[in-house]
Length: 107
Ligand SMILES: *[C@@H]1O[C@H](CO)[C@@H](O)[C@H](O)[C@H]1NC(C)=O
Image (cartoon, rainbow, N blue to C red; front, side, top):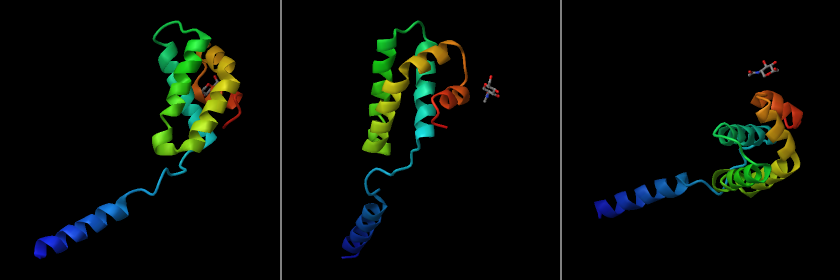
């Protein structure tokens, strides 16, 4: 009986600590920083075609779904599609993340 009570108490703790769905903890500015740092990562490994970079970044966007939720993915995809030229040119010109996200005007 003691064990049963302990088990129920433990289950209650686990259940109440479970997050209730994705938390809206993102901002467009944070997403921009995320995308640009991923772009830097890809571009510094060697020459990358625009289409290739775009696909890689869209995959990074998709990975936001689990913790940031669907809205974050949507915002991210839109940002990549609208700004792929700026991201590619600015990273190749060695501009820093702060400057690039100001250019994209998300920050
Ligand atoms: C980013 O670059 C801008 C312009 O070159 C510069 O003013 C700024 O201090 C840099 N920021 C960081 C964090 O390096």
